Length: 328
Image 1 (cartoon, helix red, strand yellow):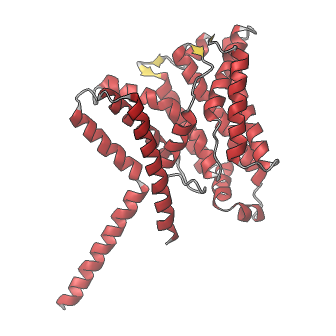
Image 2: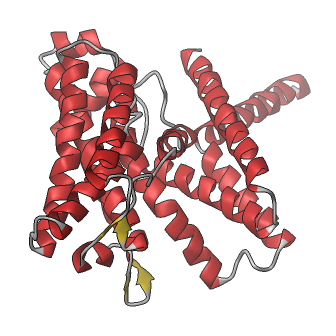
């Protein structure tokens, strides 16, 4: 009798342990964020001040918006290396339309967003119809977009209009970048979870051939994915320009790595078919908290790059481990 009870207790313990392990695997980024916040709040009282929390939100906003767009690409088993450059060139188009072409302020915002969509569409067409791997297609677009940014600006900043500058302002004492991050996150979540194209992204990322055989237009899905990524990049570019009151030719340099890292840290799989906006949001906040905490602790910016690199490596390793667990 006691042996059976012991076996039952062992089974219950094993089951509980497995559930805890699954929870940790699915919510590793959130657990890491909570632990990091606790450590930093104990290490320095400056971390939990209201002004610093807002500062973390502002720092995370641009990367999060880029990462929401990146989530579409990664869920569909692709990757977009051009988001930082597309953000820069879109804001440059918007600034040039206002400063040199005399367009109304509100129209310059439209120009910037349309520019992002066009650059995204070109990457999508190259991926879908020219059969270029998304890595190569967007790597080429990264160079093209950055080059055009320098050509348009002649390597100099271009001042932006009042409407663009609004993206860097405040509403009711709440920074607009944070508001835009929330709005774009909600839009991304709706697209992924409640639209046909969102379901198609998961299907294509999970099994492209099976999706094709089931009647899903894989080419259309791939193009829409990169158009959306371009639009989100354009919004991020406008936020950057709004904060600086100018479009900078070197804006968002290297941000594509943070966007990809945020998405993977948040639980998206580089093999496609998995990912959620809430996870990407947590991943972006986690990176911002790491940078903010290291700044408060006066850690050298050189060492900060090392730490971020280790976090990215850990996230990819965690993704590999998670896929092995799912396979079992």
